[in-house]
Amino acid sequence: STGTKPEMMVRKYLFAHGFRYRKNDKRLPGKPDIVLPKYKTVIFVNGCFWHMHGCSRSRLPKSNSEYWEPKIKRNIERDHKVQAQLSESGWNVLVVWECELKKKNFEQRMEQLCFEIRSNLDANESK
Image (cartoon, rainbow, N blue to C red; front, side, top):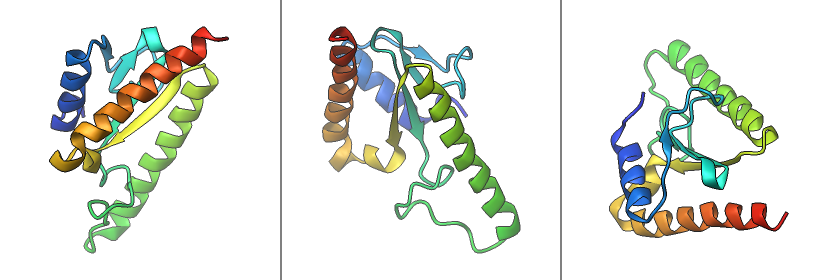
């Protein structure tokens, strides 16, 4: 889905720090949550459960595992495929996990994200 609370938190931070972006650009594989054309960077804000991050939030339910296991596996396979397509097209692909946006980690993770975005611009300019 689009417009989740974690996505909005990341977008609000980026906008406040001078980054301008597009949301869910349908022209790109996987419709990335945030597209920063100037930086040739896309950001996916992933839910830990839906994309099986590996943290405590990403445990499969014990009931109805015949449904959940293949569903989550397809999500992970699609993530890898889309990220590879974007990378091959010259895009810098960044992933922010839902658990990284907890209050105690939020500011540090957002500063790191801004650094990663700007580093990509610097790398592209030096080519």
